[in-house]
Amino acid sequence: MTVRGADAPPPDLMKRIAHHEDETVEERRNYAYRQTVTLQELNDRGMEVGRYSETRDIVFSPQQERSERMVSVPLDRLKNLRLTEEDFRDLRDIQPFVLREEYLRNYEIKFRGDEQMDGQDCWVVEVRPRQILSTQRFFEGLIWASKKDLSIVRTEGRAVPRILSLHQENLFPRFTTIRKLVNGNFWFPAMTYADDTLPFHTGPQRIKLTVRYNNYQKFGSSSVVTFDPVK
Image (cartoon, rainbow, N blue to C red):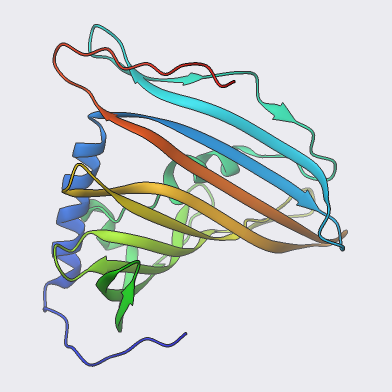
């Protein structure tokens, strides 16, 4: 797939995209939703040999407090892999990547053209961290922002850095996050997926990751938002 480059972007494109991301983040804080994570280990024939799954609800209490609730005990039947603190940070912060104004200074940004994506005419921008610190997590990849309202509709890349030492080998897959239009105005994460082979020293390990965000419900002043247990 190639990217067209017929149109010149506005000179303040990234600031405008980041400003809209700030608005999107603030709006999403008013919503409850369910997040379902499935990680599969696959053998060289593409057969599943291990699995991790969990479901969390983001809900509101009668006191208007927003909290995260595990719906059931996570199912951990992974054979070769172990999920790390960085994996869970990436699920929360990197895979549903938001390029807020305060983060712009952390990234090198290159305009890559324009392209239709998910039914939207989009600007395509490459971002990568200016400096990587071992204690921080960053996104490296492409974002597609709608020309209509500068909403990010898709991201594709990976979390960095990899963590490699004599005692630790912590690798992360390339992923795609698709957003959907919620309430007619804002694009929220709908699904993240990855199908990648991680090159561990002990041998390559193919994985499939799927994260789904469902049941977006806006919280009102007299509302209590909860979800039924997974059946």
